[in-house]
Length: 564
Image 1 (cartoon, rainbow, N blue to C red):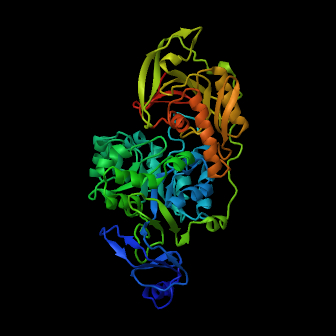
Image 2 (image 1 turned 180 degrees about the vertical axis):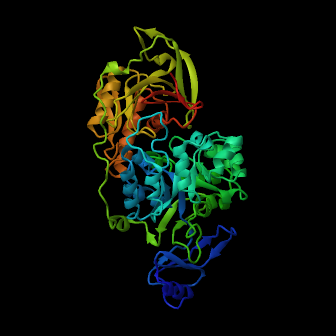
Image 3 (image 1 turned 45 degrees about the vertical axis):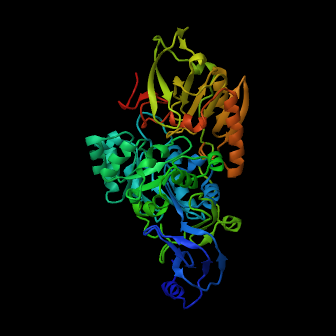
């Protein structure tokens, strides 16, 4: 914390500011005005705007517009496939100065030590990473996760200085029907921030869910759903990730009137997507291009986000606020010329100066050795429940297809785009293997497999050939988890993710290169999805309608039960 006398003296101009940004204009997100003049910074705090200042260091920002740093209000850094340090280096130069993360991916693998890793790493990054404590580990009792976290363990961490509150409460049936475990967690965080997660919930059930003290929601996928949740007091987070793409649907809802109650988030976005399209900067320029006012969009990206999550020290370029500043050539283009996080310029020297702590959760893939025979579907009925992929959505269709039983097995039918999907328990708990069918991959041959498999992070595999499925799944055990593409008995491409089977130890640039090779290999197998690996991950998440699969079998999410 800066010395109070120093802040006042530098703001009053009685002594030179530590840093002065000279020659630009400030976009004020309260009035919508452009404010000419210097921005004076003392340490990590803004002490002056709209006046002339002397500074020990002066940076010329002539011709640039200064906006508050962007706040990603909900994401899982693990889904960027890199460590918090590489995530910092990847997105901070794009203007993301605050990330509110839920480390429930790593928590589902190793429990509380995974959360503690993020708490420790977040204190050492240039950007400000805040942590929401993972509320649903596991997300349901219909899967086998690597760990279980109860209310008392979460309560022990709630006063950590980097903790905001309780992360997305995915078990919405548990809230509505007062499950004792859910109630204990909600009660422990009563009066604190609690994130929501209630896709397609409406009416009295939504009223009950919100009454539990849940304040935000990132799962709205239609304008009507977003409006109902806004009218009932929730802050709606517009999400645009690598798989979950809700921005187009929710864009009409974002206006100058609603912007104070709407925010932006990415949820899950990988380095390849960030390199090709962007992060929150992509959302900002896209929303403006779609017709939203710059004032509404930049409010949602910073000030509204800060207010929604109780971060009163940021979201505006004004005296007393944290010096999170993005310098832009154009509001519409949202291309960052320079970025300051807590008064620190995002440049190589700042990243090099960080203290890096050792990762946790190595050697976490303990799956059984598999053969082609493990992927047979023992059956005597032709009628089959099939997961139907909706591109750009993590919700799925519950399809019903007739698949002939041949020698006690239902085999893939690539002529109808019906391929086998399997989930293999990989935490060394029980060795469960469940198989089913999915439609929408376009896969013609081979297999792809992953240990990024929400939220339990078992091995998920889709394939047209059982031997290739076995090869892909076994290879994941050899490389400590990650992504693998196989065909004809050979590994075509892979990306090792040795940190909990979720994160690489490579740079984000190297991960991007590997992802390009994986995408090419998947397309050569016939895959038509833009992001097949994260799409695969969400097919195993039993809290998103309508049909999913876990290591315990096919799950009818609408009825919240495993299909017998």
